[in-house]
Amino acid sequence: MINISEVIETNTMIEKENLDVRTITLGISLLDCISSDLDTLCDNIYRKITREAENLVRTGNEIEREFAIPVVNKRISVTPIGIIGAAACKTPEDFVCIAKALDKAAEKVGVNFLGGYSALCAKGMTNAERLLIESIPEALSVTERICSSVALGSTKTGINMDAVALMGRIIKATAEKTADKDSIGCAKLVVFCNAPDDNPFMAGAFHGVTETDAVINVGVSGPGVIKHALESVKGKDFEILAETVKKTAFKITRLGQLVAKEASKRLGIPFGIVDLSLAPTPAIGDSISDILELMGLERTGAPGTTAALALLNDQVKKGGLMASSYVGGLSGSFIPVSEDQGMINAVNAGALTIEKLEAMTCICSVGLDMIAIPGDTKASTISGIIADEMAIGMVNQKTTAVRLIPVIGKGVGDTATFGGLLGYAPIMKVNEYSCDDFISRGGRIPAPVHSFKN
Image (tube, rainbow, N blue to C red):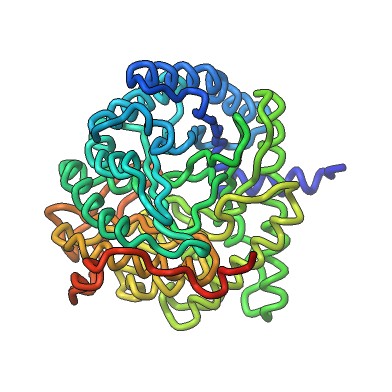
């Protein structure tokens, strides 16, 4: 039974500490939509999504209203389009037609983002996947709600360096296609190592081929709640600090479990997972950086930052695992620059660099996330940064990702503005020494020795 003190505590978390359900994401399999005729395929996709997701937004709003729990986003993920479009698409323009059909369906059902305009290239690229990748700049410039992701490596397969080199050029082209909006297309494009099949968060969400026909995945966010809890244990030892984070994460995750099960029941769709990730927003007080500084750092980026993040991530997972029947997705702590005011402040103060963020990605849920860089950064340099991050994920057997935004026409000292949950970001300095010869080698970086566990 829930007692009155727990009810009051939860209300305080929601009203004063920015606790919310960040997203209810409906995963939809499009495998039964496949056709060799492009028009038929697009029609099948539109019909399937609008049918399966017809009540998603209404149900999320009803749960929000009845339980007084903010449900910020309602989203959709679909089977990677590199698979779905293989039989029908012969050119990049054919894939853009699918992107438009997806965008039209997303608009019809009222979701803010639809993920799964994706290719799985961890070991190699099919011709269809190459065509989809080549279509990404145009697809993201002519749609509003579509998010794209590309898997470039895994612990089992190594890193597909041909795809890494290609994605450097694609990210740069996407930036140029959306230059009039501070290159916002790149904010909807992410590359992964060890990409999860059940991630509810954008831009990397897609409905994996191992999933059932449809599934409900939920992501909860509560940095503000963790921050408030830590204010009461200033100066205490690490045992008390860790226990405080763990107990608070348990409470946050229970809220996500409640919403996930309720959405599953009302929609008649199986419950998949709760993603335990702490996802910040531009709102004051809803920041991972603020949590790290409450632990005793003068600024995020100071010596000790990676250790503090390790403690936070571990205790979030320990508390969350006990609070939900199924956990998955990314789970841990997001450290995006543009979506976290504390991170922005640390960059502006000179305390936080891309190199320090890279070190922190050995620990965090994602990787180099929502980082604005100079618009004249070379494509090969972008590929080099991606390769470094893929290596961290491969060797450490964890998910890592890169979402870089080369903002055309802007340089270090300028600011890029994206709006909404995407926030704004200072342009960060990039190491300008060349990696051209390394990236141009081609082929695949082999999987590490500890990947052989069959």
